[in-house]
Image (cartoon, rainbow, N blue to C red; front, side, top):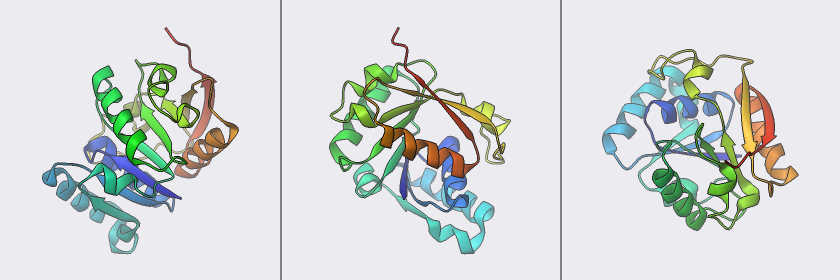
Length: 183
């Protein structure tokens, strides 16, 4: 499975590290060359030269999602940012691609309704700092066995849930799913 991570800031670097350690091919995207360079140095230190080829660094969303099975965005948890990234991802990713967005404030049902793939959208409804045990600094370590809450829109398919469950389980978490409660 190929995983695309949009944004090479602290959360994106951490997710790329965790996914590569779990054996996934990762495409890490950021429009800022300095962020990609910093991520490359961080991952070289964390993964070592043998595992670093699991991660490819790209500077466009289109290059990141072209063949992705799963995309995780790391944009700010604000409505405008999430809507913009969901529209871009929906347009550029193959129809099979599942979109995961970390959000503790927004409804995944509402975000998913703005796409042509509402059945393939999932919200990671946990503050990522809780999962790593710190504030997402470069030294963040996976808290193995931690539970995470994933919210699905009403249209989510069993295949979407299975793919997302497999990913988070392999990364080392215990996923729990619940239906989104639109506010």
